[in-house]
Picture 1 (cartoon, rainbow, N blue to C red):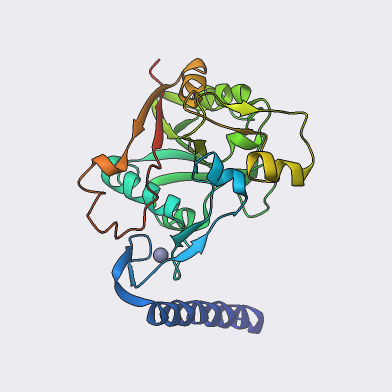
Picture 2: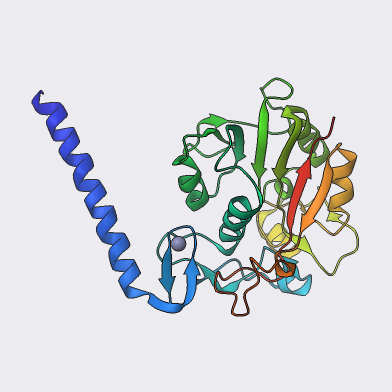
Length: 267
Ligand SMILES: [Zn+2]
C-alpha cells in the first residue's frame, strides 16, 4: 500500500473516531429518560428548540413551520418532523425491507443518513440548489421517464414553488403505478383556503406574510384537493390516533397536529 493511500485511510479512521466521540459526548450531556430519539437511539432529557419565530406562523397556526421548544434531537440533529417520518416509514411501510427505488427530494439530513444505510433501497437524493445530493432537480421538470420510482419523499418543498400543480403532476408522472409517496408541507389550521401571492418577492416581506423568506404561499386544508387534482389518492395519517405513536408522554417529541400526507398512484 502506498503512503498516500495509507495516510488517507488513517484520516478516514480518525474522522470516524472523532464523530463517534462527538456523538458520545452529546449523548452524555443530554442523557435522560424523558425523551427518546428513534433515529439515533438516544435517551435524552430534552430536545432542543427549533424553527422560525415570525408572528404569522403563530397567528395562522401553521403546523410544521413555527418555533418549537422541544423539537431537535441534540445528538443526531433530527427534527420532530424527521422522527415522525422515521416512525411512519418504519412502522407503517415496507420501505426498509423491500427492494424499492426511492426518490428523496430536499432530503432531511438525519433521515437521509439512516435511509442510506439500507442496501434494499435504490436511493436517489435530489435538490434544486444543494450540492450535497446526488442530482440537481427542478421538480416542475423532472428529467426521468414516467414511472421511474416506487416511492417519493418530498417534504417542505411545494410551498417554495410557484407552479406547484406542475410539480405535483411531475411527481405523479415519475411514480410507478401502485407507488406511494410522502409530500409534507407546512399547513395553516386557521385558513380554509390556501393563500398565495406571487407578487410578493421581497424576502423580508415573505417572512412577514408567509413565515419564510423563500415561501410563496401558505397551504390550507385544500392542499389535499390540489394533490387529488394532480392524480394522487391522498390518505392523511394522524399519528395521535395511533397507539404505536401516541404514548402519553410524547416521548419522541412529535409535533402535535402534524399530519402525514401519504399519496398513492393507482393507475
Ligand atoms: Zn437523534
